[in-house]
Amino acid sequence: MRFLVALVAAFSIGHAYRTLPAALAPAIAAELALEPWALGVFGAAFNVVFAAMQLPIGVALDMHANISRQMIENADITTVYQTNPHIDTKEQAILCANLVLDMVRGKIKPTTALETPPLLVNILNQGTADKPMSDLIRLADEQRKRPGVLSVSVVEGYPYADVAEMGMSFIAITDNNQDLANEIAKTLSDAAWSMRAALNTGGTPVDEALMRARAANVNPVVLFDVGDNVGGGSPADSTLVLHAARRLKVPGVLQA
Image (cartoon, rainbow, N blue to C red):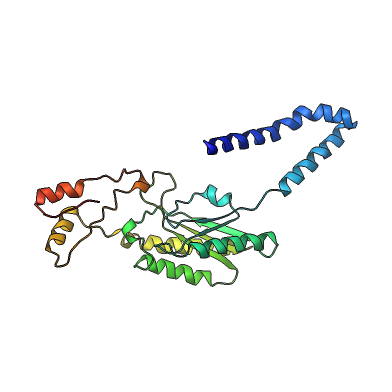
């Protein structure tokens, strides 16, 4: 409810900014004895002040983000966690904040490039310490060390999301060098595309997983149904493993 109230309030204020000047223009011109050209200068001054008050935008995103071009264009700085599991959230937030501050202080002029190859990555292959994802992370580290590079991000995407921009993406931010940003983002994108087969391996059929669990010498054995994922809209109440266990007569199965 609070979000709805805030949204309505923001819309109302924006609407007022756009409509009130036109409605009040005749009264303002009469009250201040302004000619049309002077009223135009008055309106322009208002817009200049309004523009000067706009704040720069920096965002630090989850590595599973599905990135759209609109997201990149509407932000001055975009950084992304570069570890999965995510252990660099603080570092990426600090990097984002520092780059925004440097931009405001005039120390840098960020130029950003985005590449979005038509590539989904199996979520079982998204661990950044595991090949081939670790090879992409290493390549990004190498590109990050080049002169004039401010940030390089490998974005794994979230393959269970039902959005148009679903998939892997790559972001490069440089200091006033669009060509370099384009080159780095393209280099990473091409590297990922060459690894597309390896990025989509993994996964064990349910029956095979249950039989291997039954034959294991050490217990308990944990089976993780990665497809029954609330992040992709699932209610996380799948009983496929339980049904298979009954069919295969695998005892001692507990679903949590």
